[in-house]
Image (cartoon, rainbow, N blue to C red):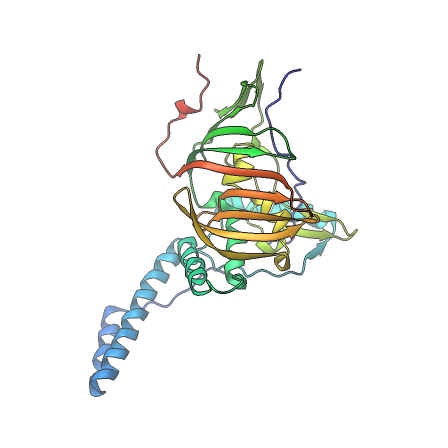
Length: 349
């Protein structure tokens, strides 16, 4: 029986209301105004002078940082709401198109200052070591956002991972991807010694198992919604059906894209209800700082290690109601934003 290259089934591409992101707008003080402010405090006591000068310096630095954010069109983090948007199928389809039009015209409009929020998550973890978990809405909203939109925060990646779904034999995967230049390669090493390959470049997808397969349509070309509010990535149709909205998977990868670099489906299936999970700490894993996430779903429980800087899913464990491990993924090596070449994705010989 011919072995087929393993993939994770994509969920329905249905979108809900899109809203314009709130970009940060700032007032910029001139250097002369800052100097005037500093001079004005000279009549106060020495202690007051030092305190006010420090405050002014901090304000100047904040304004400089905010100005840089403004130039890069960085948005404010959208805080999560547990109330689902309700819409009709026609409205959902129209909103998908609106989101795509917006993305084609202006690019990713929901990028936030991820490194700043990552520091906040790490700091909150250090402050609450004696607490059961970090339940601040901001920190959880940040992790959710990054998993839903990780493709906006990196360009290239190279790594390897192991996984087993539903008790199947463990499979090892090696992968590379370049989002800007749209090429990728994924190789799977099966328990029986056979290898499956998937190559994407020049607008075509090549799969190699026992035979060579060539497709004109790449993973990223399926219709989806971009620039959609994080709060509207999971919606409820009028009929009461729960629908999840995928973005285009620009990594052009199958398992390693879905289960590591762009884990939007894990976020939408396990994290959309903030009452069902918590951030229980931070820890280092394969040289990366990770948020530890624990929660419950589908009558069981799960644990995730999520890269706080990029939203990569580095480790996932799903347990049954009686504590039995059902499925797992684990990244063993990962580098991102490194120099790659198209030749690495092309078929050899």
